[in-house]
Image 1 (cartoon, one colour):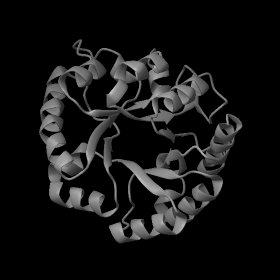
Image 2 (tube, helix red, strand yellow):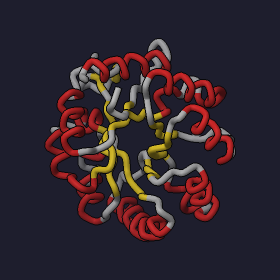
Image 3 (cartoon, one colour):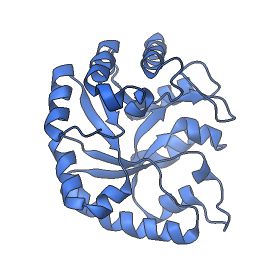
Image 4 (tube, helix red, strand yellow):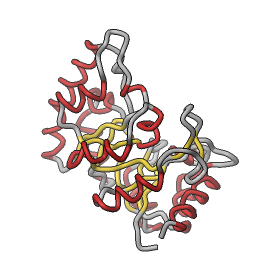
Length: 241
């Protein structure tokens, strides 16, 4: 398969805490080329580098909290540089009020240029609620777009669940869109492996190819297991070749 797909390791969270090495080996054999970490489970940077080298996988990004940057910036940056991660993606944050949003905007606007000097992009990954107004009327996604220059990883399934046209949103985000999450499911929020739901997976896939935006698979339901879902997803993507 010529096209390079990544996978968010939250998809296989039933195994990653105890068998990271085995998971990476299995994903590489399936045909995934990149991984997006969701925690490191005590592994040293050297451990992670060796596992990636042994499997031929590359790290395309991580889902890592803002608090790690706020509480121990130097150590956090050193770890991510050591594993070769150039994309630090905040997987979500409590932005449920205008005041919380304003604090977050100030924090990321301060951190982003510092991290860029270290060769690391700071980004944000959405869920569905960012597209709906908070109780006080503040709008999370609109604010992030207007008041920060964060990179954006568009989770196209959660955008769909949030009532958005994911393909149109990809066009609007343009150069700020540095990854898409390819995910499927139903409009009620029930996740499914790729090709089994009602989300616009193929349209997003084709648009990402046209735009040159890297695609990262996420499938969250662990049914019957994360590994088996990951295989269903990559087989679906191979069927689009």
